[in-house]
Amino acid sequence: MARDSIALYIHFPFCLSICPYCDFDRQATGFDRIDVYLEAVERELRDCPRERVHSIFFGGGTPSLMQPAQLEGLLQAARERFDVEDDAEITVECNPGDADLAKLQAFRRAGANRLSFGVQSLDDAYLKVLGRRHSSEQARQAAQWAREDGFAFNLDFMFGLPGQSLQHWQHTLEQAVQLAPDHLSCYLLTLDEKVQMGRDVARGKLVLPQDDELAEMYTTTRQQLAAAGFEQYEISNWARPGQASRHNLTYWRDGEWLGVGAGAASAYAGKRWKNTPVLERYISSMKATGAAARVEDEAPDRLTRMLDTLTLGLRLREGLSLEAFRGRYGVELEACLGDTGTWLQGSGFVEFADGRLRIAEDHQLITNEILVRIEEQLGDYVRRETSTSQIAAR
Ligand SMILES: C[S@@+](CC[C@H](N)C(=O)[O-])C[C@H]1O[C@@H](n2cnc3c(N)ncnc32)[C@H](O)[C@@H]1O
Ligand code: SF4
Image (cartoon, rainbow, N blue to C red; front, side):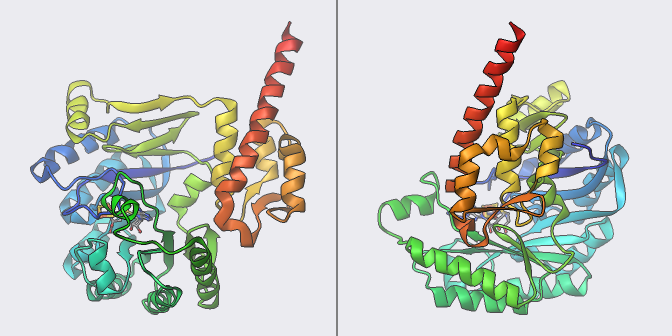
């Protein structure tokens, strides 16, 4: 796909404690290795291909644990290697518990212009259940400082918490809007049995809301946030006009990005890879070879690439451009989807409109089920395409 700039992701895997629902690449040990780790990340940055960059995202883990000088060092290394656009979006993920005014001001001076706070809930009892180290008051205070410092800022929330009622979530949303964020991410709590809360649910110690209650919570999210002037642009993301995350849009529009640090993934020049999430392995491979050890490294085949484009694009409210799909794969998306596409459209699950394919508004929560149908059909199409070209080549 034609593009003149890419996104850059920098992973900081350290957290002061591990939240019982979290399955990200993170650790609450090895703090004495932070400096060595950051040196390795700077080295990886210096060896990246030279590119123009429109966004830099410090994700984690908890990047707000970094000292401002450490953030500045990474940004300087990035600026030396990349042509960072003057108006690049530079985001730091923050835990409200480590956000003090002086630190946020120093992040701003270092070049960050957007903050993303993991708030999760504004009810102290739930923050405790979620193993969070901060109070709701700290989250409110952090939002106020972000606003005063002139940052654009996002607040992350989770809904569908154990025992949560629809009214409780509605009240959370009302309070969230009062904090005047530019952007809100509202995630449905999703638990794997690998994590403590997932095991507690499997054993019946915690009970999650029923599917119909979750659907109501999602509907109310869309209604309340629309009424408060937020535009939904992705399944779990809402923004004030013009405040959608440029960085995350790069992922969903199936653009190119480079990820550096332990566990960081990249999609670049037709390849996809993921660095080892094991801190010591990452550090030692950077030291020994100047390159990060990888746990995944592939050049995806045509079917995988098409599926990625669809899976990512259909998460967006704008959907997927039929023309861009044709330009990229040389075939019409409607032809690939055949009868399945006609059925999905006839049943009201998807819409083909304004040169785009999108999931119908009321069916966003079943996007995964819709994608399963699409995946089967696309698989058949690509297999037929491959056998036709093999016959033609004989
Ligand atoms: C990588 S985390 C980083 C945020 C930061 N470490 C913090 O927790 O404050 C990004 C967001 O993903 C969401 N998240 C994490 N685990 C989740 C889960 N199991 N289900 C749904 N959302 C989750 C949370 O809202 C979290 O703020
Ligand atoms: S939710 Fe955030 S703070 Fe909690 S363990 Fe995961 S990455 Fe760390």
